[in-house]
Picture 1 (cartoon, one colour):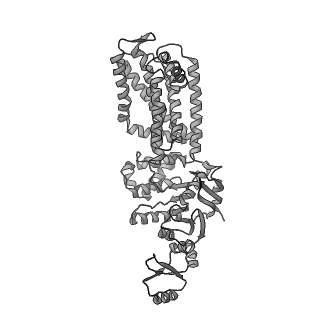
Picture 2: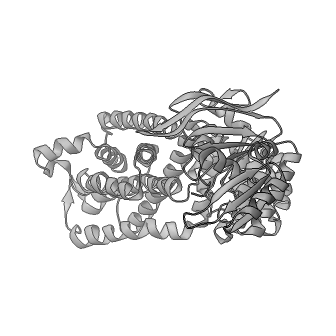
Picture 3: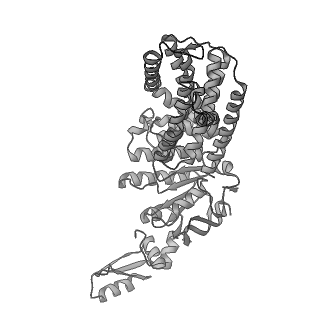
Length: 282
Length: 243
């Protein structure tokens, strides 16, 4: 099996704070891997280390076999990055942003222009190619960032909370783009704290909390381990959650309760609750 | 290619802001020329030449320093506010390429500012000689300060720190390094302090070339030393700013 992303006991400390703690991760070529966890869990730090923007305190990380610390230039050549903040250049046009990216990645003019045209069509920004990016909405900037990250045809695409702050419609549009990118052959490493995003998009999900990887599997298997059905009991203390494998058991429990209850299918947030006792959003 | 990409980005933006930038490069030297050249120095003679002729090379050294160093604030904003500098850091280009591209853009800005003053000064009646050395020393000056700008922009952690650095180092240098009056008029301690600062040697070399005098080789050597030191420091700082 070919691992396009691999970490060995990766750790990052900021003074006395441990952002990542002995992280062992392996992402297979061609998959959409979701890195799910609450804010501050260590997702972005992991992503920054993997994309060579932050140096780890200890441990090693490899992209396409290249060590991100010892061989950063080669590691960077095969990856595309969409950070969580909007960092397209507002003083350049959409076309110029992509041209700059192509030049930085050493693309020849003919290939660069062909890819720019194709990707501006792909993210539906062809009609704004000559507009200054400072005039773009957040969603348009995000789509341009995705086009930019794909320009040099990376083997692996890092998307760090790439739908934060976007409306539901734009978010779904970007999900569609991510699926198409993956279908065209790119491996996708997606960090998110949106449960639905991880469930809808990812082939496998890694759950991280306080810098530790606490579970890795397909969403289906993670849900099976937790129980397919959930009964939430509402009370003044915030409520309790019970997990059931069978719908009948869940219904029976709900019917026998003398308090307000809600029965539903389980999701990845429930997996997180089962393991940590907390919600992803807490 | 990486260095050219970084340089190209800066030039696209410079072209887009060209008239504004040209105005900026013109206004403050123009005020200096009016206030010090016409207002105060019309009848003065310094080191055997009219004050205007004495002052203009210093003003060129000062302005080319300020404009080449101004890239520090641009990089600072790109790093901490717009986060666009990460586009360079996350690309498969070396730290040397990033520094080369940024420093070249700083040099172009510094040279542009120097040319503007030169043209203005001729209109004000300054008697200057144009030769290869004159432009070479301006080039070295812009190389020194553009490289220093990259270092400071990598070392400081905020816009406020950057402004403080300008206030503590760049502003004092502007007035104390033989730009507006000869160093010999300074008290001894200030004289020796000024002798350590790079702008002093840039002023001396540019003035010597512009007035057709022998260029102080020690000053030239110190400029080369600072250029190499700052440029190497900039590459190390950019490397440390990422992996």
